[in-house]
Structure formats: structure tokens, C-alpha cells
Amino acid sequence: MGTIDDYLAGLTPDDRAVIEHVYEIAREIEPEAEQGNGYGMPALTLRGKPLLSVMRAKKHIGVYPFSPDAIVAAGARLDGLDTAKGTIRFQPAAPIPDDAVRALVEFRRDQIAGS
Image (cartoon, rainbow, N blue to C red; front, side, top):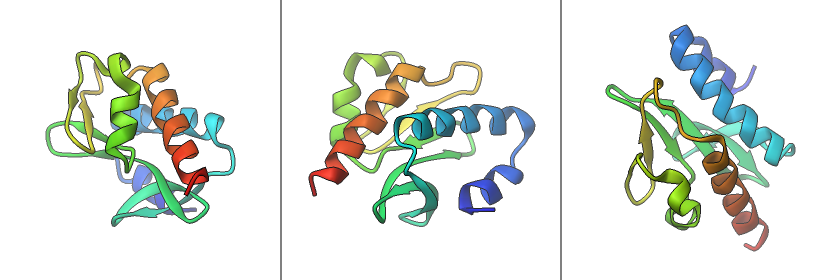
């Protein structure tokens, strides 16, 4: 098991399903991503750099693409969601759209490749 698997094991079934779905999409976009840590959070990593983390907080689920520019790049796909400089927040009943996850991961993957 990896850090994400360990984290998911401690969640409620509903939260786990929503968070697993986001990670599944990320892995489809970047199959070379591995389980690791980013800024102390369980995350997918790529070439040793954090790619994406998804975690349950007290009042929401947060998506952390480790890049404010990735959030800007996802743009209108995030309409209706609560966003901040490095975070996207949503409720399990109104999950982040799949195309938004794809945009975040593609941008971050390309950013890592260019560094």
C-alpha cells in the first residue's frame, strides 16, 4: 500500500468513493504518477514532484494541484466551486467535474515536465 491507499482506508465510504474517483482520473492522464507526499499530504507525484492531492477537511473535500497557475488554467471548468490560490473545495454531493480534474492534472504534468 502507498500513502494514498493508507489515507483512503481511513475515510467513510462516501468520501473515499469521491476522492478515489479524482485520483483515478489523474492516473488516467498521467499513468506514471506514483503515490507519495506533497507538503505533508498524501499525493500523486511525478518525477519526485507533487502532482495532485485530494483530502477530506472538516467542511469540504479539497483538491490541491500544487500550482496556483493550474487553477487559473482550469478556469471556467471550476465555476460554482470554491477556489483559492492553491485549493479547490467541493462537497461530495457536488463533486469537482471530471474535465476540471483533467485540466488541472494536464497543466501540472506539463509544468513538471518543463522544470
